[in-house]
Amino acid sequence: MIDPPAALTSGPRKPPEIVRPPRLPVPAGLGRLLVLAVVFLCAACGLVYELELVALSSYLVGDSVTQASVVLSVMVFAMGVGSLLAKRLRCRAAVGFGAVEAALALAGGVSAMALYACFAWFGQSRPALVGFSLVIGVLIGAEVPLLMTLIQRIRNQDAGGAVADLFAADYVGALVGGLAFPFLLLPLLGQLTGALVTGGVNAVAGGALVLGLFRRDLSIRARRSLLAANALVLVLLAACTVLAGPFEGAARKAVYGAGPRVAVRTDVQEVVLTGGTGGAGHAGRGAGRSGAPLALYLDGRLRVSARDEFRYHEALVHPAMAGGPHGRVLVLGGGDGLAARELLRYPDVDSVTVVERDGGLVRLARTDPGLARLNRRSLDDPRVRVAIADAFDWLRRDARREVRRDGPYDVVLADLPDPHLTAGTKLYSQEFYGLAARVLAGDGRLAVHAGPPRARPRSFWTVEATLRAAGLRTVPYGTPGRARWGFVLAGRATPHLGLSPAAPPLRSLTPALLRSGHLALARTRLPGLPPSTLVHPRY
Image (cartoon, rainbow, N blue to C red; front, side, top):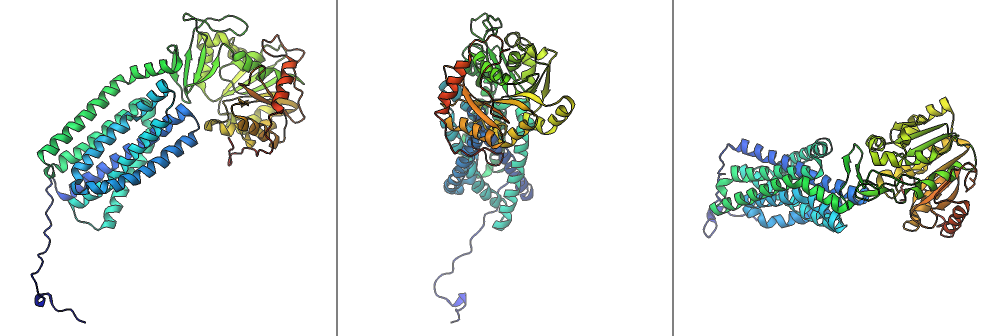
């Protein structure tokens, strides 16, 4: 059937829809370019907030894989929620976008400070991490639908072309933000100030677009409200920036108890020393003006306490020095100089090579009065050579040259952080132990710090299984009288667990205590655990 012409149909004709021309203070082409520039800036700021949450939570909590997974998954989910919620704002896209950007600038700018405050004063930052990921994700998700409406408001364009332009600017902005965070913001401003400055940029960009380009679409009341909101956000961010230094000092005091005596940010980590600079006793137990013993924190975690560090270092060093020659020793890690201190107590030690990634920690171990006294200035001993390098990379690239020149090592000590920290997982892998075994003499011994066996038994026994998978025979043991530290002694042949007749006087170890610690651990063995590898980490 052929439809009759419109003129012959009954009923009144519907008048054509009148499209209101945009009321912009600039030409449409320039207005469209300004919108895309703001898309670029907002995308860069959004990615900085995301990376800031990942970096700070990894620093505060550890396990960067888990923290990145939490932030990314929660944010992507929240962005979907934000996109749906933004549908209700499309009828007033300009004022909606202005409000969203003001809220995003405030939430993203103060997120790092809020996370640090939760960690310092409440000891838990995970709820704040999830909360800020949700809020920031919702606000970022609301941006795109509103920007799509605004860019179509300037000039009618097919949806595919508008989406392509919008996402091109968004992705390029994300690239710039992702590169600016590690190479510009962190080195120059740090985590707290970097996030606050990013929030300021976000607020200025969003406010300028709405109050400048689309001001004719706003009522006087809406214009004044947005202007006041953006001014308030900028004032709050500026105040937080001014107070960032005192805030960080107060937070450090809350974390470390007494005020830090030394707090430096090296190329690798934050290094904090608390306690005095004096010393007494066998290991130079620190007791300064405040009477507190020296304590060394790396990235907020206590690594050395002068109260009991001798228990750890004696257990790591002296069992490996028994059962064979120990003239040449390799220490992987140990930048604090404390393992080297114990090694140098043996007069027949000819050379000690310390491979430490953090040159700043090594400088502190040599120059700080308290730490240098605690390690007995071991790193300045002529028998000690320090290589500033990643232990894995050093074993791959430089170790063979060292072995060809001077021979294999009689003893290798892995004085490294706990394996559950993602940054060090590769240093507890089968590949790493294979590289260490290559530089070990036929009757040499490898001693590995494997984490607390009671608190994390699966992690401890995975280290032991990984050493066995690398072709080494193992003997697990722990510190006497307590289960804070666990170790594995390994070699091509099953090593003897004991103390050398030439061992110096020790404060915490005896052969009987070592054997009882070994037997107690053997009863808790978790059989059948697979080894940890680079492509399949198990910690």
